[in-house]
Length: 217
Image 1 (tube, rainbow, N blue to C red):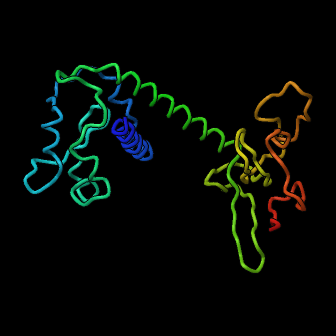
Image 2: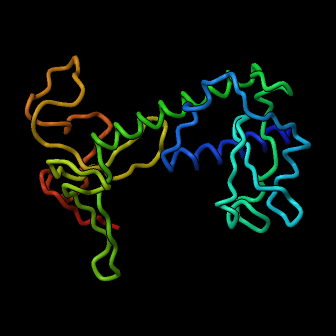
Image 3: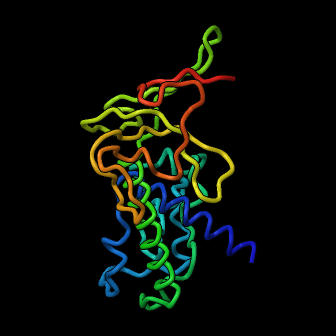
């Protein structure tokens, strides 16, 4: 069971790395018929990038990639050499046909992409604040039209955001005018942006409509 958990973790790290660089596993994952050569685990184990190795291969969800160009990362001594020449999971049988485990992987990828899109939408609505700390003046948070790396046509004001199930808070920038992003059954003012979101809280001692706030230690 431990080996399976480690393999799953390794697979998740590789998938996350791929997603962060714009690679969408679904582009090849949905294909179930291949005419390419099929490698079993023993054959794949030869492709570790070593001196006597015929190449450097990386297997992700049953699909084999030639990563020779990334030898310094995946080859011997590289930070990701653990992944080279190994099979994480059994997503295809020896004939190259998909196994039931592949459907589970597809569902996990879809869920991961859904959560990724959800997080992106949340940051568009509530971009993170800019923040700085100085030994003399302490901490300060502020909002701009590019704070949090989110370009927009409004700056907003800083607020504490409390996520469900989380004990702490983090600073987000909140739009102050126009209709709310989500309609509520309660009667809210129509020109306060997202200020009335129940997850938000004002910073004590700061003007509620100022775009910056000096935090009290």
